[in-house]
Each structure stands twice: as structure tokens, then as C-alpha cells.
Length: 342
Ligand code: ADP
Ligand code: MG
Image (tube, rainbow, N blue to C red):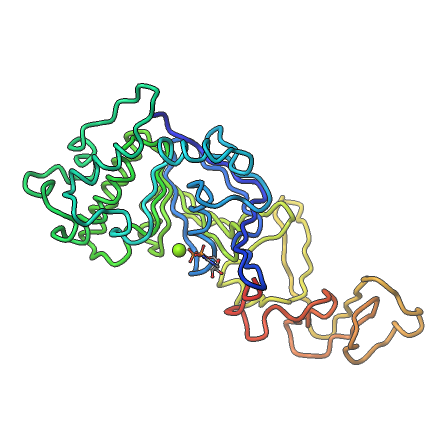
């Protein structure tokens, strides 16, 4: 099967719970070319697994667009999605055992995955042994073992083999190296590299920056969006469609959420972010503007920001209170709270 690319535009994903919704993806823009290998990084709860679920066709986009190859995940019928899940996309869920049948041997697990997906259009599956050899498991004596008798690393590679059983064009693997020692982790990474070389697009969720470094490209998900990308070891912020930029953690230290910035384009094509300093006057042209006489020398912070001018008297850098946005401050206790209102 030819490698399959992925494209997301403003992808939104929502978990609907009793009485409230959780927005897990809040506008993901992402393109992954056929044959690329990409690591999805990001803090826990940022939406990595949700993104994988959407790409696997297990969860529909709530808004925005998402394509896996030619399949439009928002518009596809249930049977198109089922076909995509069976043939085009291989998924290894987090936790190797969840992907395996404990009473079948390694070889039988692969065969079972092939049988479950057999399609009518004359598709010939690989011999299970060949699939296992791609992940380094076609070892005499190991193929005949049940998952419980394999090492954790072998079990994880078997989970990948099961996902690869039908030669998908896209492999999605959620945390395939978590809870593995370094050697086992490296074996899994070698297996993923072999998969990519065989012409399969690989998307791996990981917590491990080292794993990210071994993939061609990293995409950091923060707060349900693409927060940054790494190419050949260099980290980049990505300007979102709405113009928003996620600042990296070291910059957030000096420019905490709510900081007032002067953002200016420079002649050399770069841009400068300069925090407003003590003594600066910041004019907020939001909504109703009070008469000019009252705005010229306001000394204290008004309770409502609409159209007010504020003499900045506190210590630099200046941090807004968020009142003018019409909602409670998003970060009552600093950046750790970021996105908690999702
Ligand atoms: P990650 O994989 O990056 O840790 P997830 O995609 O699992 O993040 O979660 C993203 C957000 O969606 C989190 O706020 C999480 O609590 C929420 N979430 C994930 N799964 C569910 C679910 N089944 N029901 C409700 N909320 C969920
Ligand atoms: Mg996860």
C-alpha cells in the first residue's frame, strides 16, 4: 500500500460529557506528507491521543477539516471509515496489551488482525512472519510465544506488527516506547524506522524528547493546537491561522501570559516582541471610549477596561488582568493552569 498523507485545517474535537464539553483539539493545522515520520510531543492532556483517534477514524471532527489520504474524516460514511480503519491505517493504542489477544501466539495475533480485515478486492496479506520480521520479531522461538511470555519491548513491537498486519499506508502509534528501558526503546525505534523505510507514513505520540529526535520531524501539541515544530533538531514556533503563536517555555518565563507586548516588524524581515515597561501608557481601544478628559491621566487600574487608558505603575513586565476579554483570567496560578478551562 502506498504511503498516505494527512492534512488537518482548524480541526476541533470535543468530548461531550454530562453537563459540559471538553474541547480536546482547538484548531489543529497540520500537514504530514506521505512517507514522513513524525513524533507528536506535548504535555499530558494536550490532545495528542485525541488527534490520533481522529486520524484513526475512531472519533469524528467536531469542526474543521481532516483528511487521511483521500478520505474526508468529517464527511466519510461509516463504511468508508471502517474500510479506512481496516486497510489504510494501522493503529497501536497506548499500552501494548490493549492491541493483543493474550491467548494467541505472536504469529497468530498478526494472522488474526489480517483475517479481521480481509477485503473483497483481492488484497493479498503478507505472511505473518514477514510482518514480524519488519519489527525484528521473526525470531525462532519468539513467534510461537503468547504476549504474556514476551518481554515488554517485544510485546510493544508485536503491537506494532499487529497494526502493520495489513500493510497500511499510515501507522499511528500512541506512546509505543513508554515504560521501556533504553535497549527495548531503541529496538522499537529501529522497528519504526524500518516501517518508514518500507514506505509507510509513521505518526508516533511520545513523551520522550529523545524519541522525537530520532523521528524526522516533531510536532508539539499544546492546549489542543500545534504549539511548535522541530526539524533536524531545531525548534520552531508556528504562527496559527488566527495569528496566534505559542511562546516556548523559556520565553514564557520572561513574558508570562497576559504580558502587554509591542510587536513590531523589523526591516530585516524579523519581528520584535517588547514587553511594555513601568511608566508606559497603554491605551486600550476596546468598545466604549469614555470622554477624552477622563482618559488623559488615569492613575489607577480601572475595574473595566473599555476604552480606558492605564498609567502603568506596577513593576515590569506589565501583565493584564484579562478583564477586557470578558472572561475570568485564564492563568490564576501561572502557566501551569494554561488551558484548564477546556
Ligand atoms: P494527551 O494524549 O496529550 O495526554 P488527550 O488527547 O488524552 O491528551 O486529552 C486531551 C483532553 O481531552 C484532556 O483535557 C483530556 O482530559 C480530555 N479527554 C481525553 N479523553 C477523554 C474522554 N474520553 N472523555 C472526556 N475527556 C477526555
Ligand atoms: Mg495520550
